[in-house]
Amino acid sequence: MKKLLTDLDFEVRILGEDETVKSFDCGDDDLNDFILHTAPLYKSEMLAETFIVEDNQGKVLAYFSLATDKITLSEFEGKTEFNRFRRKHFPNEKRLKAYPAVKICRFAVDLSARQYHLGSTLLQYIKWKIWTEVELGCRYITVDAYLVAIPFYEKNDFKILTASDAEDRHTRLLFFDMKQFKRAIKNE
Ligand SMILES: CC(C)(COP(=O)(O)OP(=O)(O)OC[C@H]1O[C@@H](n2cnc3c(N)ncnc32)[C@H](O)[C@@H]1OP(=O)(O)O)[C@@H](O)C(=O)NCCC(=O)NCCS
Image 1 (cartoon, rainbow, N blue to C red):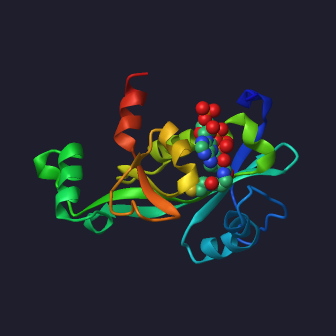
Image 2 (image 1 turned 90 degrees about the horizontal axis):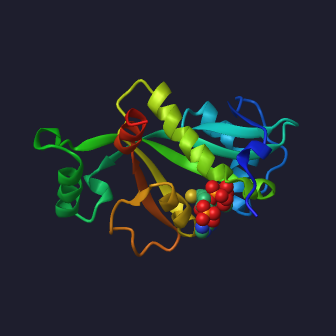
Image 3 (image 1 turned 180 degrees about the vertical axis):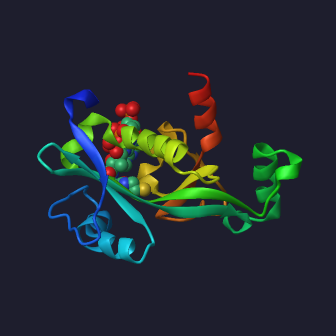
């Protein structure tokens, strides 16, 4: 049975430059390896910032890493699909060549914390963080989602961007429109 998140006391903070995480297991070797070994390099090279989620004993329950991104023509099958996307989202005068985004580069919840809906809570936290703290234009959140994780992102209002990666056997590019979040906040 799913437990209430209030059962879980946690805190989110940025991973330090020389900090290593000693133990983490989300069931995926690549994602484990990233937080156990590679995240500090991404930080020092300014490629991605990693956030860790800890319980009150300092155990890492989850992590995610973020970097800047953009949605451009190159993501789509061709000009027709890109134009369809632009027409759906923007008035005529805002048909740009690229639209600003933040990418979720890595995202994982430890197996021990799966029953708390922590993943969804953290996606909501990321949306809120972008809305309140990123003082730059940022219209979208993007993620190259593992195929198995697509239902999770869709439940959190992410959508498949393009048909161009439909044959990909590992990931698909999904996006969340921050305008949807803005509308929800304003109507609260
Ligand atoms: C994907 C992941 C981050 C989701 O975190 P979580 O805390 O388990 O997610 P939530 O409990 O908030 O899930 C929300 C909904 O998505 C569903 N969901 C979560 N993971 C799913 C999956 N792999 N396949 C299908 N549905 C999934 C849940 O069943 C839940 O549905 P419900 O609301 O009907 O109960 C986590 O399962 C994980 O770390 N998986 C391994 C690594 C991974 O795949 N990362 C994503 C890389 S793109």
